[in-house]
Figure 1 (cartoon, helix red, strand yellow):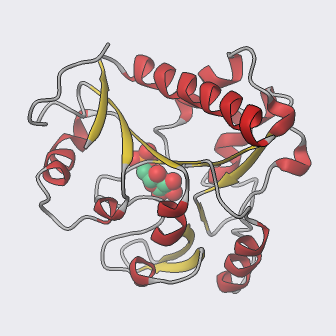
Figure 2: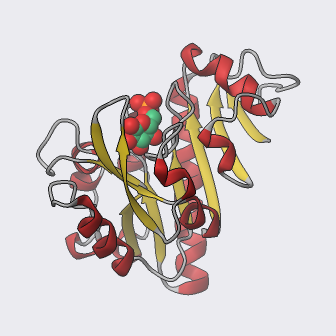
Length: 229
Ligand SMILES: O=C1O[C@H](COP(=O)(O)O)[C@@H](O)[C@H](O)[C@H]1O
């Protein structure tokens, strides 16, 4: 595992935000645009806040996507898009036409999945991911059909939550130039150790060659993970 460990959630968020800024500048310099997929849940909130204050990000050339979405509209407090909009996108000069949310309110969700796959760029530069306390990533939950789905985006029914989700497939995640997984908090320490030891069969283990940004609490049970800041 390529793990970068920081002493606090704030420092973890700052490092991930700085990595975003550097990757954006490099992509725009090399290819004229930065195509990045954001994650949802609670963990990236700190990073989004830091990112909104960082200078010299070429927002006019940044294109925003989402690695998963709940089956709700954009105004719902459960919406991953809304989190990013409130904490980051409404504070930076990214052109609205370059923000591509997943339409979690559309039924059937398969229709939204197909429409989203059609608007994705040939290859994303960075996919930002989190890890749930059941080892899911994006909306690839343990035991669900989307774990083996083909294509780029899937609708996924999650029995444990009795709800549908939209999610990138592993193929889409692993086709990106880079994958970054942000994990903080002691509640994730046990699963993180199991993932490191190839135990548990958690969905997150299907993400290849990721850079993990973690705080000391999440990394407390890892074997040989010295703090880097
Ligand atoms: O449901 C979700 O959960 C994961 C993890 O969320 P967190 O609250 O533990 O940070 C998240 O990465 C995903 O985008 C989200 O839809």
